[in-house]
Structure formats: C-alpha cells, structure tokens
Image (tube, rainbow, N blue to C red):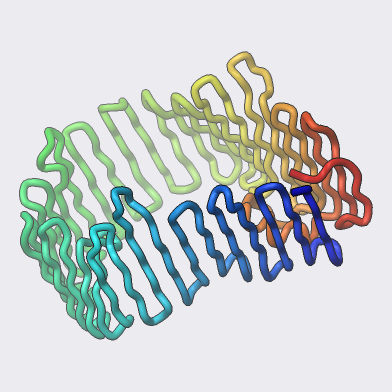
Amino acid sequence: MARSKLRIFGPLIYRERGIEEVEFAVRPLFYWTKNDRENFLRVEYLYPLGKFRREGGETKHYLVPLFLSRDEAWGEGRRSKDFALFPFFKGQTEMGERYWGIFPFFGQLVDRFGRDRIRFYLWPIYSDWSEEGAYTWNFLWPILSATSGGGKKGFRLWPLWGYKEEEGVSRVDFALWPFFVKGVRDLDTEDPERERIVFPLYRDVRSKRRRHVTVLWPFFSHTVDERDRLSRWEVPWPFLCFARGDKVREFRIFPFYRCKETPDSRSRWILWPLYQCEEDFFGDQREVVRRFLLINRTKTVFNRKGEEISKHVSIWPFFKYSRAEDKVSLSLLHLIPFEDEGFERNWVPLYRIYRYGRNASGKRCDILWGLYEKGDPWD
C-alpha cells in the first residue's frame, strides 16, 4: 500500500497511512495510531489526562483522576489485572487472586502498594494489612495502630507515643512526634547506626565509622564518614557547604557559586539559577549538560577522543535543535520546555511554525503548518 497523508487546517486534523502504521489526530483533543504487524495501538485524548495503549498482549488505559484499567502478562499464562472507576475498583494478581472494593466504604487489595494484603472499612476509621508475615491494624489512621508477627512488633498512639521494632534488625521510638525520636538500625551488621532527635534543635546519627550532627535543622550540620574519609559541613544550609573525601569534593556559596566533583561526575553553577553545568562519564563517553535559567539547555556527548557525537539545544520559547550522527532537526517555536513524546504528538504541532530535518535519505522542511513544504515525508 502506498504511503498517503492528509492535513486539514494545518496540524488540527491529520491522517497518515504507511505500509504498516496508520496515524490520525484531531489536535489537541485526540490522537490515534495503529500497527497491526506489531499488535500495537495507542489512543490519547485530552492529553495528558487520557491514554490507552495496547502492545502485544498487554493493555493500559487511564483517565486521570477517574479511571484506570491495566492488564499485564507475567509469563507461563499468568496475568495481573486492575480496574478502577472511582470510587469502585477491582483486580486480579498474577497468581489469580481477585480483590475489589468501593473506596472509602469497604474493600481489599492484594499484592499492591508494597503490602501482601490491605483491607479497609470506612477508611480512615479502620484498616489493616499484612506484609511478610507481619500484621498491622489501624484505627483512625494514622492515630492508632499495632503491629505483630513475622519478627516485627509495634504500637502507635500518634503523635503522643509509639515504637516499631524488627527483631535483631532495628527499633525506632518516638514521643510527641516529631519532637523526640530515637532509633537504632542495622543491628544485623557489623556497623549498627543509632539516632537521636530533639526536633528542630538537635539530631545525632552515629555508628562505628560515621557520625552526623545537625543543630537547628536544617541549617547547621557536620558529617564525618571514615569509610570514605569524608568531612562535610553545612554552615548554614543551603548557603555555605564544604565537603572533602575520597569520593566527593564540594564547595558552595549559595546562590553565587557551587562546584562538586565525584569519580564519575562534575557539576558547578554560577549565580543559580542563571548558569549550571553538569558533566557525567558513562564508559567511553562524556556528557556535558549546560542550563541557563533552568529551562534553557544544551547537551553535548563526546567520545573518549574528545570528538563530539551528538548535540541538543533547547532555548525556550524560541527553538529546539538536535544533531546526532547523520541526523539534524530544528523546530520553531518551543513553548513546552521539557521532552515528552505525548506532548510532541498532541500539542507541539499546534505552535511549531517551522521545522527542518536532514538525514541520510535527504532534507525536508515545513513552514507555517504546511503552507510551504519541501522534501520527503517526515519520519
């Protein structure tokens, strides 16, 4: 089948049919694309609120904040499913266990939100959950709760008093939360850590190899870590910082200047947020990102010989430029100062007045939403 394209009123109504894929859009309300060979279907409406995606045997559909439907494959014939149409929800775990509910009146969830099972009745009046053999019940969450089983125990009458303990691993106690807290962690290691808090006056965290002290949180703090031979001062945060160790060096006078170095990165800024520069090393490549007033950015990637591999420039709200290998692209205007494929499909064509592209197959350009167009069809 030959490739065909239809546009009505510039980018508002658009349809393109290729050998394998079909696209249709009524921007910014609706976008649809389908590829039968890959069993792929995407529908976006009122983006970013509504989206449907089917790929292979899996589907996901949502309309924020009212609706969610998800069907995922886990191999060996196992699937997990979720469906929610507020306030009703139901689902099925990958092991075939079903659950449902009407929030906040009653219901249960299985293998969700990091818990094995969650139940609630007139939430937050009553709820309970189980996790790795431990059972927790809550009354008027988060005020009253108790935990037992699986080597764990705890009780909370928030904010007056409470504790949580995992036998042989950790224990945390509080009184008049968050003003008085003490705890111990990593008891099952050679270097357990103890913590004391009198908020906001004082916080002390110490182990055999590390100590961190904060006075008048978060303004004044000092950290010493013998493992990395690190000494770090914040006096006061965020204005002054001095850090030196085997893995990090940092100096900051906010908002005038900051410089930080680690084994695989370097960063600095001057007159924040006027100018920032971040340099990261990934194997044989070096990536340099410079930001101007946060949303204006250049990103350049070099190989180990110092040769430029790719470059991306976005200056809000004027233009976006990209070059990688034999591909070059340029577009005007650039009103959305971040990268997102959904916005590129649904919103960007409405205000992009000029587009230019070049690759191994040739050059192309588009001016004033197709009023003038030259070159091969866009990829």
